[in-house]
Amino acid sequence: MRASPDERLRLLFAHMNEAFFSLDARGRVLECNERAVSLLGVDAERLRGQSPWTAVPALVGRTLQERLLAALQARRPSRFLASLPPRVWLEVSVIPVQEELWVLATDITQREEAAALMEQTEKRFRLLGERFQVALDSAEMAVWETNLVTGVVFRSEGHDRLYGYPEPLLEWTHEKFLAALHPEDRPEVEAQVSGIFSSDVKSYTSTFRTRWPDGTWHWLTSRARVLRDAEGQPLVVRGAILDITQLKETELALQEAVRVRDDFLSLASHELKTPLTGLSLQTQLLRRLETEKASLPLESPKVQARLEAIDRSLRRLGLLVDNLLDVSRIQHGKLDFLFSTGDLSALVSEMVARTGDEARLAGVSLSSHIEPSLVGRFDRLRLEQVLMNLLSNALRYGGGHPVEVRLERTSEGARLVVQDEGPGIPEADRERIFARFEQVRGGARAGGLGLGLFIVRQIVEGHRGRVHVEPGPGGKGTAFVVELSL
Image (cartoon, rainbow, N blue to C red; front, side):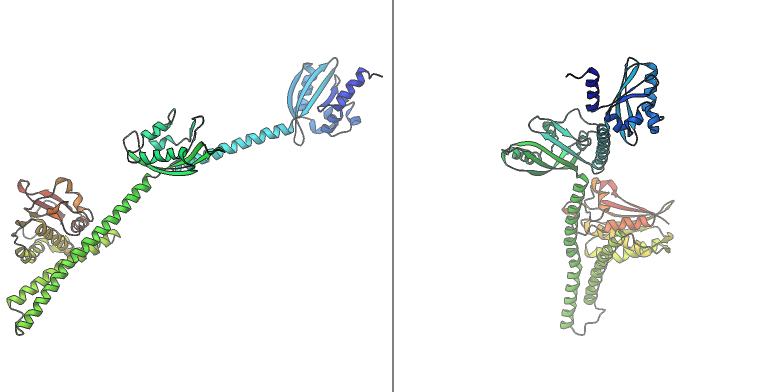
């Protein structure tokens, strides 16, 4: 016996996955299936004959009630999303059928939760990507990937900035990368790239210089991994690239510092040995004189000559040691001054006289023109150190030519000039020689620690003064000029 159409329809409603219920013109439930009963959470008998929101008060004021009431009034098909408490999402279709309103509702909770989860995941990935990009930018770093099969090149946002481009280029190619390399670094980088195809290398590191569009050179280091297929053929190369320009500059500066230190220690040992050798020699000569003439008085010319030579060696040794100590003090910001009122003219005259014997032994004519009674506040011992360094330089580097010392009054204080007639100092070196461990290049001015003029500048600036180099009259020789405020 065949089932009637009504029975078939009831069987269909009973076994369908969608919830179904029909409403009369007043919104009361006429028929409903088990799926509708399950979703609304009420018995079928309780649901039939009254509106869904009467049977389930939690629906009052929700989207489902509002849209069903609107459909009853409009009598037009519609589709909308609605929710059931606590967390059920429905896709609802409303179809007017004669005097009834048929309602089909599909539970799309899993789909909505999946979509929400996907949106949340995408948001997290976007946030992680933004943070990752900030980290890359902060570290002056970028990531890249080259698909060797398709030729597609991926690079992170900051990649092109590492090559000197403020804005990303439309494309980046291997040829553009090679063209930016320093000529000295290119062969090694090309060999590493070729090695990807000729060996089974899985990772490699390249460090190279790249030329920016503004002409400057920058150091980059790139660490890459090679992904291969089952036969070992390279498929993808991906890696990270980092700007190490500052690191390289620091490394080169440290290497230069080590070189300067080694050169300085070598010079210091030589310079310190020279006066010590002189002291040892003069001491031996005194002992020989004592052996030859035990009654030789201290006032005798021979003894006095030996003692004066010892005194000169001690002064030179003392100046070297003072300079070394002062360099350490300056480096730690502890160069001290003791200012008092004194006569600068008397101080300069005394230092010239004290250097007279050394000048005579060196065969140098030492003269002075000192304006008298230049009184002011200064550190006597420090200015003695300035004069000793300038006079020692003039005697050593003046080539045996005359040396002149001048002290003049100025509107702001005093002007001290120590001038020699030696080979002079090239203009390019006149500022550099005041730096620590610096000397004029060339054999004519070889020797010394390269500290004297550095100390001179520090002391003069500590007196709120200025020191500089000028060529001598007619461009001959060198004049060291010290300007002081008294």
